[in-house]
Length: 487
Image (cartoon, rainbow, N blue to C red):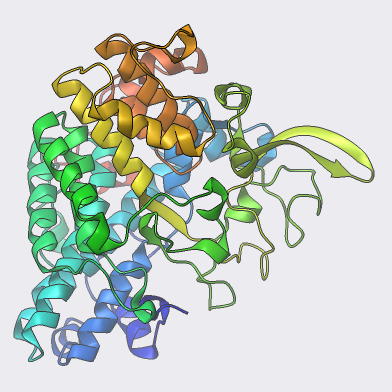
């Protein structure tokens, strides 16, 4: 098991000292402030405190559930086909979710719990006597994780409270209002810029899964792309590509070699959330979550199939006829009691769980193919160049998928690109099928301003570009925390 997943009793105490899963961010004070103040004395203490930050990525409100609900179910990639999958999920799917929907509250709370854990590391490590290089690396890891959590929050809610200090008592929470998104982005950029300096490109196998220099660079490139700062995005993403030799990044030869428990932390993976089955609740739920309700043991052999993320017919149709990625990404039927049942379901996270909701499958947050496509997008936004570098990047992805190259001189109109807008459309289409079911589609539609035109038939209105602030936050601090328009 990876070191960052080995929750010792010491780490468990840290988690216990933080008010956790059942409370809002205002209650993130340690239960015992005296214990908290005196707890962080050694490098080992700080390693365990940092492990708690990584652990927050496994919460139900982060990558265990919320990020794929928001990133995929909210989009045109997946849907709820059986109401028994859950009313809160159904509401997110059809744009009827409101401020009391549990997805908003669990996502908000879990992200701020992770931010509190990161702030603890950044604050408490200052006074700890330990190797200075290791200390700088721990701070850099915490800043990367804090930036990732805030990047999720600002994209989901817009303006959010920017908390950069440890909240030691509930009264402090009342001081925080929602900071403008621009301020939050400035902090994200500052954290990632600082993190990049002190993070290594690689670790030994025992520390696989930690944040790297490449991860900070790639995430920063995505932040710039989201901000439509094309020059900065292209520069940073080019740096990731130029450093691929040092970092060991490359496209896997086969698309199927990217996914599954046997392929985790591969050469294409830049950062992924670590899950491990049979390890005190550190397994991932995706195999059960994504199997169709009513499929029995045909799709997942252990535990119930929950039907919470079912590919749409539109997603099925998005794949070209000979696209090699489809057979590893989704299926359209399964065999049950000798009969073929026509039903879409996701394959990327398939496997045999050790127990119900307890699989080994990690969740990939950033991978090299994403970087190549983002760089191609940024180059095209700066200037459309027929058959230029952006085309070569796009075609790297298509070639692995077994698809013909796109060019500015193709005789077949299907593979012809002659304008900046046509290249935009090609990249968007490629991102959809290349990164399907990995939590990117909703955020891609939002940042490219295509969400409303693509999803209006699904019920989306203009105010749905943001999720509602949890009603509990407004009730706790009325007049300070305000709701997003339209909710």
